[in-house]
Length: 197
Length: 197
Image (tube, rainbow over all chains, first blue to last red; front, side, top):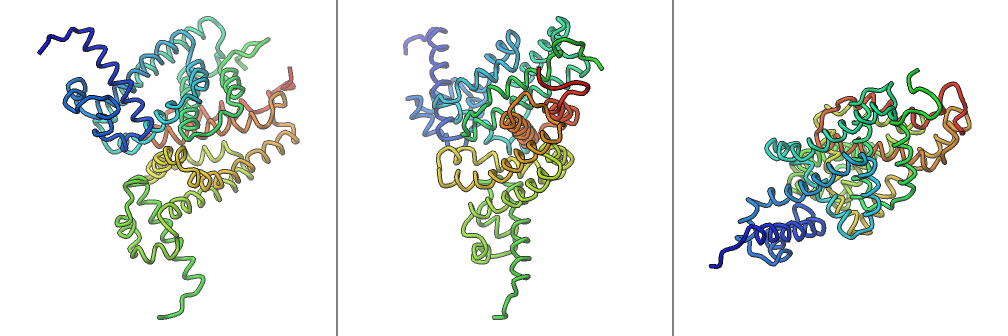
């Protein structure tokens, strides 16, 4: 058996993640059976589960990929920018499907503490990046200062969750870009005056 | 066979709806098999499907019950009040589960036009009530007038969707009451000045 370099292992891992994402998007979490994951990746279950312990681990690894990208965007441009990026990608074939497969696990999040814990790890870094950025914006004087950072963060997260559900349900984008302007305005210091009153 | 009155039929129908709601909440849409629906209602599948054509119809009838209540609350107190009511009920055992079962159908909404159409009918009346109330609020001068009603309506709907996803995922209520204050403030005419600028 030829020796496989780390680069080749990493490349193989990325190929599996991309194929798995498309498979979850198309068939949903439950519908993405091991057989379908084999077809999507062109690999045997043995090869897939050499890289990822089981289907849960593979699913969470795809979500973890999203989380890494989100943390970078949040740190640089904020959570509203993540929403605008999502809206731009709304028409891409996999976007709604992949978001939908994430919604499908809602029952497991309530009934399977181990799964919920692994899922929560994924979002903790995003939550932290959101609060860090809001803190920097407040220091820079562009954020309203009459509402705690924590409440503003949860407000933005509520809007993000709403957008995920909207797109996952396959609804049209409508006027969501203008809606995101409202979301952004609601956390900003009002123009021409102090936010405190 | 004794003759059954309309009142008895209506009462039986309500019993089935309540038991089905609990069954969907507990097992999810897919997990609420006909066998489990029989156990939950204490009725045979024949008796259940005398009242509701199939499992889809039963599921949509439970959702329709919610929609009727929502339309009444929206017309009287607005969509933010619907959200506050939902937050109060967040700890009730069935709330998160029933919301979760609604998320589970996201893939069908994208892939099954007939099902999507039946689901959309349920939300059309709520959407109309939301826009009607916003129109009345604008006439009364309490709504900001620099943003179209349609955008304000979609903003409130985004927040509602976000709350549904949040609670369905079993996350804690956190500071969501204060977040809803922000949502409400964002659509109101600012105090002490005209909204237009």
